[in-house]
Image (cartoon, rainbow, N blue to C red; front, side, top):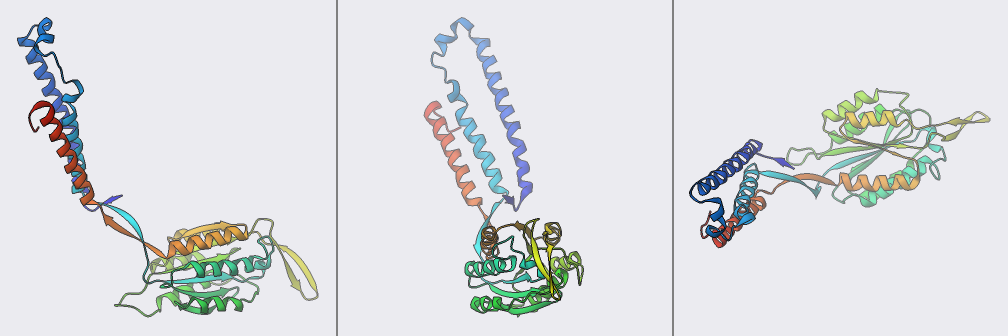
Length: 318
């Protein structure tokens, strides 16, 4: 919860002072009563003492005052609402290590299937584009609301050597920042980057992530694979089995710098769930909704309750 006028909360400091004043008044009245009536005569003078009922109206008033002060601070809570516009670039690593089979059937095939799940879950109003990257990033589909075109572009993936994560980020940022504007405003954008390793060619990934952050484009990274992952590397007539452990640390730093989020998945099912979650998350935006009226109504109701109790038990409003 946040507050549009937080300085109003300083009024809460007055409540302990008012309760302390009330307690002093209670003690003063008790001393005055004992000064005029002998202790032995007190049961006959006041045979029905109100006990807890004496303080109940005052506590209701104090609580009502606290609620009304909080209402004056204009409290707000965040509510998720569907996006009516936006653009997302799916950036997929297609380097040779993506042929590792530790994520069934291969890392790349699992990523393609997760992309399809993402496209099926993404709101229709969101434009989704696709690029692949190994040594060089290639835009396979510009962002479009026709998600079937992006789904068809997934068949164009081709594996090769190298991992240019920085160049992939810069390419995605360029695509997102050159989209047509609406009412002189660029639609909000995001990048979903799936990879299994550290960048080893091209631009520095963290510098590219800072450029994305400067354009208010968060990067959601997905680290694929397990530490024991291996892939076949063909060298002429020979095939060498090479280790391909993922590097989630670099991807996590990229996400942090760009104000996105990092995910690490080791199974195809986990990857599908991650992409479904991302589709839901990126298809919504958080809007602050003011709840002043609700709290003010609750404060007035407590004040009315205190008045009713005081009138019923003691014959006065307060």
